[in-house]
Length: 212
Image (tube, rainbow, N blue to C red; front, side):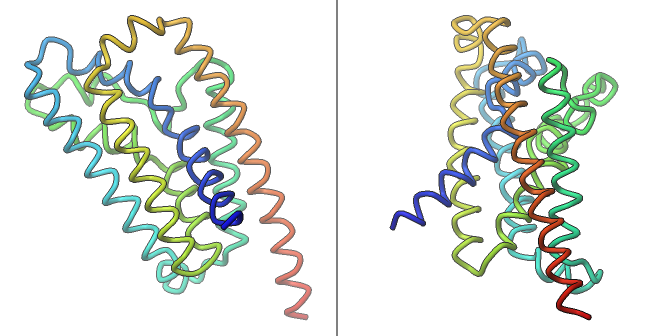
């Protein structure tokens, strides 16, 4: 039971730091400002459902993808660690990583479905989030997959309410508060990225030592 709680908290915090609901709320409010409340809720729901489906797909098909492309778990952890570290590094500087940035030209087209792009991709389910999901889910069997999916589902619910009450939330926290939270999440992500990288190096050494 203790191991279950530890794994669940670790996975949830990894996703929480990567998605950073508070910073993403500021982006969401900026993109949906002036829209009716009903339309805002619909966009938030569609974006989060899409992100959840993307992450769930990679969680369940992760090992199959490894087999098709001949990818090893150490390689994923090394590459994922670098991606997560870079996102965290940019957040530590108070910036948004280019991997998760919502580009203005993507949102300027009034006919574009912002729920899919750039909200779901790459803001919510970007490369770093996908790498984090695959790293956690591929670490074990169905247990780790279900824990990873459940943790991400919980975070999606939290993010949905952050989006819906975004204006009030931002008013209370303020831009300074969002900046502080972003930097703290960045620190957590850099540590997670380093840990993934260290684990990847260790696994690679064990893998190649055993192959000899």
